[in-house]
Structures are given as C-alpha cells and as structure tokens.
Amino acid sequence: MIRLGLPALLLLIGTGWFAWASYRRAAQAERALAELNAENRALLHEVRALERAIAAAEQGLRTLSSHPSVPRDVAVAVDLTLADVRRLVERKELDD
Figure (cartoon, rainbow, N blue to C red):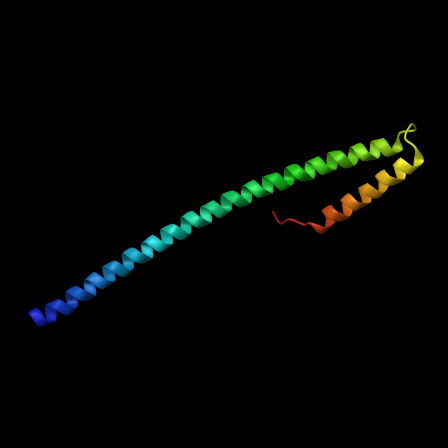
C-alpha cells in the first residue's frame, strides 16, 4: 500500500505545483498584456493629438502663405514646409 501511495502522492503534488505555476504565469501574462494595451491606448491618444496639432499648424501655414502682406519668398518657404509635413504624415499610417 505504501509503495503504491508514495508515487501517487508525488504525482499529485507535482500536478498541483505545475497547475499553480501555470496559473501564476498566465496571471502575469494577463497583467503584462493589460499594461501593454494601456500604453498602446495612451500612445494612440498622443498620436491623435499630434495629428490635430499638425493639421492646425498646416492650416495656419496655409493662411500665412496666402496673406497678401507676406513676402513671396516666405510664402514659398511655407508651401515647402507644408509639403514636407504632408509627406511625413502620409508615411506614418496607423491602424486603429
């Protein structure tokens, strides 16, 4: 009886230990995933805020370049800047 009981007891303890360790790893992975999702949401929020700021700056530059009191060379430089901003923004595509 003791010969049969000891391996069964060791198997039961080993199975319990393995189950507990697996549960701890799964819980840790779930916490890490939740943190990554939170960071991802925060970064997307920052990106959207930057996109809005770029759009506002672009509109301001358009207004500035079309104003009659702005010298022609400044207006050309502003248009080049707008093209550069557009090119930079178009290269950055985000998946929502």
